[in-house]
Length: 338
Image (cartoon, rainbow, N blue to C red; front, side):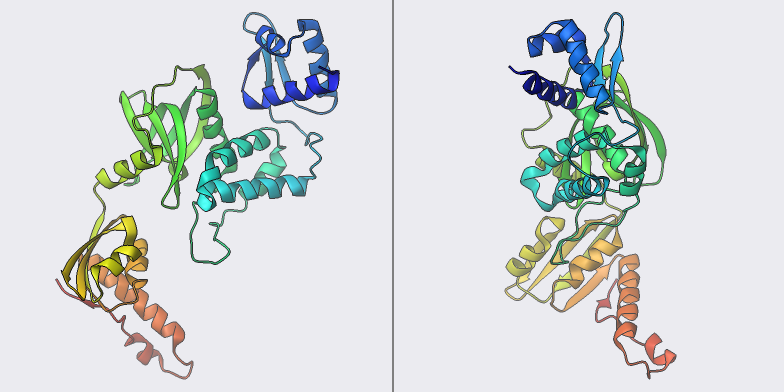
């Protein structure tokens, strides 16, 4: 192969794997160690941040640099590409989620720190063009990239994890897969301290650090990673068990609620809805979106929360000439029973 073709192949190999031993990399390219060093020197002169390690176990790795390498992309374009990949990785196009994570990891690992900070400053949840479908929140590109690269390279990962109850603990895991489920990203991993599989919400992972220690990947606990995460979520006790009666056929309500709750028919025109949720915001949204008369039976926190939503929304749609006392009397069109 020509020198230019070989150098492009070298760059691709360095982007696809965290660390390459020198002899293995030369063997893959079909060249001598001397030729390999010359090609690496050429890439370094072009601005690619390739680190060379000497001695036993020495080799090459591609790291973050002080300036953007010549990728035929401006800094604005690089930031735009990463933001677009975030949209895909967050669930906009599920079929390409894995590819988006992989591509984003390749780009972010060579971005200058200033551009990373610029991207991380865009912390709003991404909304679809229609404004009706919420995507997964990706607020820390650098952290997500660290986790994705550890999955790719089968390297032990350490991080601080915030549980649903607010507890904070250090975890050491063998990461395997990141999947997008119900507007959130989850990491499937083998927990070394607990000796079992665990599922972690990516937005609750803080300060992930790759130890550089490789591990032999175990087979995933299920053929379908998304199905596995759904099963893990459903097996966890929810903070709130919201119960409501809906004046609509069960078939219609089931299509609207989908897998977020359970629907049981009462008769041909009404049904019972049960939604297990950690967030009353989400349960309120699900019930409010049904476009049918409802009676919320409990829990008491859910009834009061929905009434509060109703008062705010009703007050926001009243004429400015209405008195404050009238606004306070506005009621959410949902009744509560215990």
